Every structure is written in structure tokens, then in C-alpha cells.
Length: 574
Image (cartoon, rainbow, N blue to C red):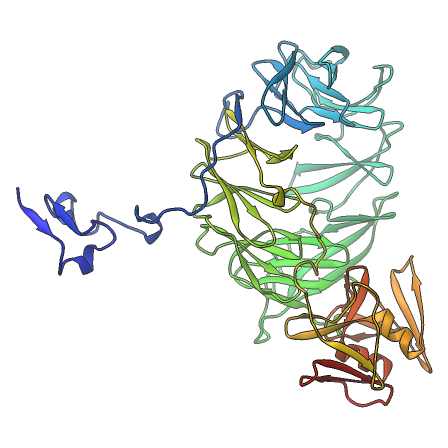
């Protein structure tokens, strides 16, 4: 047998063979020079620094019935307990220990468990029966039987049980178990929005469209069907619903997103707004791959460009959209002031902060993600190689790594400090560090601002700011607490809860601003701001330049004394 000592050849084979190798050369064991591949991410000597956790307990779930039903078992949690259906039984376990507390029933189906305020569970059986079960004791009784003889899909809202079975949506009064009405127009369980039941539907005709039906919860009567082809509900506010218009558009030159306002009571489109973006060189931007709304912000993802951020009420002639540039696929957010993307090689996840566009990397992720959920301070990722990661949303640090045999997952859940992982035919429970279960700020400005040690003076005199308020910085800009300074100038400040705008009167100047709004209103006209005001620690902050421009005062930064110098004498703010 020939011995091979890696020395000069180490330049070619380092990191794959080690320092000394005995046996046939690697190329002699393949069928040709193009028959092998090695990636740096697969080098066996690279140790994953994220600790591998062992589950505190596990439970067997029903095995997948097909590749399209990878997680058939229903799992929910609350009040320190975990409930799941497997083997035709509903089982309750203690979340922290996995101790079985009780079991109920036989022949139960794999439809979702409906939970009513954590005290009562509702679960369907394969013969169409629906049982009401006390979540503490496990005692239950049948309250209704759907006519289809199939496992029904169910949900609960207040005192009403909604059942989808036999191509019908059925309303059942929970106190009596009596059927109230049936509706055969919809094919999914509804959600209650503004006193109206809304249900989405995919319908095929000349073309396949996605639409929404509105149902009267008292009578079950269909009140309206949304015309055209629209996304699911983006936002609901009062009597207004917001949907993305997805009707095929042959004009792909400039329109980035079109959003229709729909009257909740009539289903009629009352307004339609186009959000237009162009590339840096003025070229066209094609329709977005994903559109979301967060408050008055519209986020439109364009493949290869990133995400364009618009303000719904902004005049496009005054306020230009902001491009949060990124080559990855936009998958989630905004959450904790961040947008989340798959890495451009589809191995791992990163985020960009909305305010300053800085990047946050999430450590350890090294395979395609098939499930991502954010709960409080935790980011939970299930990969196609069976690995599950728990990471800190704010810092990107991975604190837990778990190995399963799954490729897809049910929704991650957290109960009593335990991470619940539905990994195909198995349920795992892992204890989490306390920093992942803490509440977290979710606004667009979250995590982007840092407190500065700078002082503020007004006409040369030190200004005392309220406790907790101070100068804040982000993206190389300084922000100052707006109300404290305007009142110190002698201006009148009034807040309108309905419009959510703060109006300032200072001499002959009258204007209004709002948290997250990239424009001020001056005599009814919009004026662009350099940055949107942001609410931090309960106070509204604005950039020092905008403060000076709006009030007509001088605002200067003195780097030597680290002081924001405000003067009533009007000069250019810097």
C-alpha cells in the first residue's frame, strides 16, 4: 500500500485530509476530476460553537400521512400545559416536565385544537363529533356533531364555535350546542374583524383569483365578495380594510405596489393607491414579490433590489420611498425594528434595521430554513437538515441548537420557558434561557437608537430634560426630545389622538408632525423631513436639523463640548 505524506500537496488538500494520509490518493477513488465537491461549510474540523441541547422531554405525534401533511398532529399550549392529539387521543402534559396530566377520548382527528381563554378546549373527532374538554381536569363531553362524518376544522370566538365540514361553514352556539346557521360560499374558517366575519377563498375561472368574503356573524348571510384578485388582508383600521391588488398588469414599467381600500360594510373599493419606485439610475422596478403593511408603512420587496419603504399617506411628489437594499429574499418583518431576509445563497438568515439599514447576522444557521417564528425576544428557525436554532432577535446570537430528524416543522411555541418543537412525528420540549422569553419592543425604531452623552443648551443656558430623556443618535444623526424643547421655547403643543399628530404653534409658525411620518404638515401641505420622528422611551424625537427648520431657530452641534446648541436666532441648522 502506498503512503501519501501531505506536504507540498497540502496546498491542494489542506482542510480535507489532515497532515498525514495513508492510502490511495483522493483522485484515485473517484470516477474523474469532476466527480467531487467540497464546500468550506462542510469541513469536518469546523466545530459549531452553538451548544447542542437535549430535550427535557419528548412525545410521539402521528406520523406524516404524505409529503404535503408533514405535521398532522394538533399541538397547542397554555396555563403551563401542552395539549396535543395523537393516536386518536387528546393528551395534556406539564410544559416543564412532560408529565402526563390526563388523556381524553378515542378516534379524535388531527384538526386543530380550539382553545377558549385557556380554560376550555374543543377538539373534533373523525366521525364529525366535537367535544368540549376542561383543560385542567380533562373531563369532556360531546356538544355537537357535524353532518359530514369527517374530522371538522374548528375555531372559537367568544361564545361561538365555527365549524368547517361538508363544504359548509357552520356556526354553533357554545352555551347550548345548537346550530345557528350554515354558509356554503366560503371554504375556510373565518376571522372576526370589526364585527364582521372575513374568510379568504381561492377561486378558478378564466383565471385563478384570491378573494375575500364577508359574512354576517348573526345570520350567516354572505354580505359581499371582494371583486378582482387581491392578497389576504394587509391591515384593518376602523371600517377600512387594506388589500394588495394582484390583478394581472401588463404595464410592468414602474408600479411597485397597488393597495386598495375596501369599505368593511359594503366590500366596495373606495380608494386605490399606487406606490411607485425606480432604481437608482431611474430605470423600472417590477412588481413586488411580497407586500406588507405595518401601521402606515408599506413595505414592497423587489427581487434583487431589496425592500422599498413607503408611507401610506405621503405625497409621492414630496416624499420619496426609501430603499432598504438587500439581495436576499424578504421573509418576515418588520419585527423589533428589523426586516428579515434569507441569505442570497439560501443558507442562513440576516436582518436589516429599518431606521439605519445596518445588518444583523444570525449565528450558526447553515442550511435552508423551512420554518421561522419570532416570539418575544426569540427567533426560532427550523432547517431542512433537521437542526433547530433558538436565537436572540436583537443581537443575532444563537443560544440553543437542537437536532431532529425532520425537514419541516409545525409552528414553534413557547410555554412556561420551554420551546415546543413539532418536528413531523415528534414533539420536543427544550428549556430556554430567560433572555429569550423577555418582552421586546417591536416598533420600526426599535434597536436602532443609542443614547448620547451630549448636552442641550437653549440660548446658552443648560436645558434640563425629563428623566429618561436625552439626546439620541442613529445613522450618524442626532435626535432630540421634541416636546421638551418646543415648550422650552415657549411654543404651544397639542396632540390629536384621532389623527395621532402633534401640532405646534410658535409665533406665526404652525405645523404638525407624527411618529413614523416622514413629512410635516404646514398649512395643509406636506414638507419632507430628513428622518421620520420616532417615539423613544415615551418621548417623540426629531432630528436636530428638522427641529431647526420647522421652528425657524438655530440648532448647532458643538463637537468640542458635545453640546446641541439651540438658539432662538434663526440660522441654518446643522
